[in-house]
Length: 244
Image 1 (cartoon, rainbow, N blue to C red):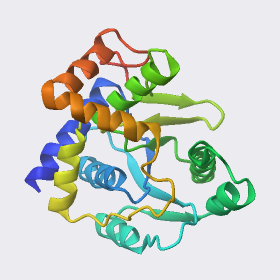
Image 2: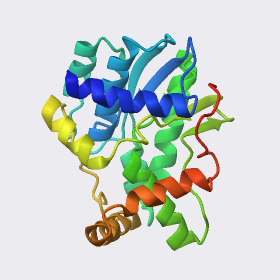
Image 3: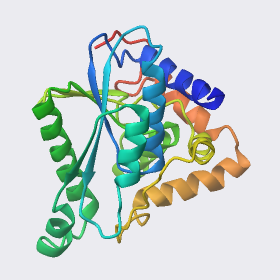
């Protein structure tokens, strides 16, 4: 519990710095079954018990239809946490790989999963979607944009999706991946391993490997990049924003 207290403190700092949660918000956590979204769910459920602005919390999984992915342990976790859970069965895998035979399947898959999530949120009157992107994801995304697109860009901690009238929030941006991995093991969270055939073969994996190599020589490299994003700031990354 002490470890979860510390982690929920990291969430709260990001939430307060970027005005992610307001009183009365109805928040759904997008739970893929991976370590990041599961820990975000556990952390927000703990934060909900003492955060001064009351909010509702639910969890939604979009099941893309890959074989041998069992989300029943996630449903059991949600039951223990007292969080309503919805698992949406979809035919995303069939459409992306069998029907469309996409050369870049990740892009279409992500677009279809976002659409399914947004539809589910609208149907249930949820106004915010919490995503499990963390500190390392932010640094990697910044470098991906710089190296492969030639622009200074990163996803925002808070993003308004006008088509769905939903705010996306990323409360884990101050949490590093190693801390997340260690805490997931300590809490014995039920990680669902992805069986996607193209998992871990993306340009993001290349950038992650590059950062690992550089960080061995420059241990504070990621922190410096992250700090530069806030100080420049990259669009949407200036902290101490009003609540939305």
